[in-house]
Amino acid sequence: METSASLRHALLTSREQTLTRIYQRTFPMVRRHVQQHGGTPPDAKDVFQDALVVFYEKATTEGFVLSASVSTYLVGICRNLWRQELSRRQRLPLTGITDAHAQVPGETEPAEERDTLPLLDYVEQLGERCKSILLAFYYFQQPLEQIAAANQYQSVRSATVQKFKCLERLRKSVRTAVALTLAR
Amino acid sequence: MRPALDRLQQIEHHLLGRPSAAAAAQWQVQLLTDPKLAADAQAQRQLYDALRQAGRRQLRQELDRIHERLERQSRRRGWLRAATDGLRRLLPGRPQPDQ
Image 1 (cartoon, rainbow over the protein chains, first blue to last red):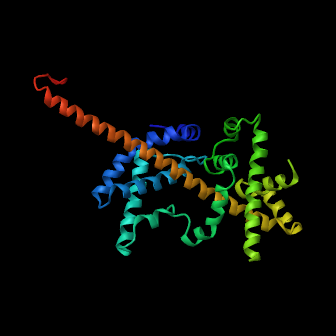
Image 2: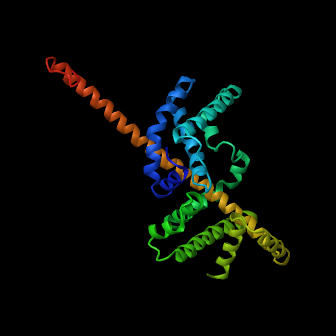
Image 3: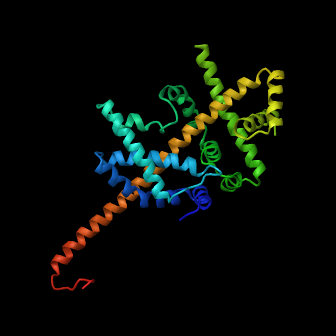
């Protein structure tokens, strides 16, 4: 069984490869479970991807300890998510899973999401380089050494400066937008 | 770094780091002497929220690509199996590998 530290390292240094391996091994089990419990393959995909997002965020946090194999852990999350989704459908029979899966469970409330949606779009408008540096550092939790190497910066220090320049650019575009909204 | 970038870094340490008791106390003092600090910290917190949402969106896109690739692979394997099944029927006398 993979240790939490080696798993974290694999996710940070070769995300696509590691996630593909986990996907390949675990998705068939989740699909079987969801299909045996009244769901479709697209339902299984949504539930599994929600679980993988939660898993990525937890597994890349320093100090996270995995108490079971990755597959067991993920299947556990998926069973819970699918149970919640089934009871949600019983309450609101005419809505699809798309409404629920837009939010990662237990995190943002829909109202909060509406408020921050425009901010999300400013991240998209940042330009590829800034967007990639900021997401690599703040979301994907990659170490600055790795970000510096991937973007051809000579040192961690210059990558740090660049990161804050990008953050400043994001703040400026958000601030301009907020000022415009207030002026309207 | 420019003072503006230093300020972003300082606020980041407060918001994302684990400030020591002394640093936390100093932050309280700064809030009193720097009237814009609280608003700036609040604005920066929103940036981190936006980055988390953008990160989730990107991760979902990456997972979609992985999903599609694996589906294509398994469809191809299914097709290959169907094709070889046909071949095996055409060659009835040929011993199967496991016989």
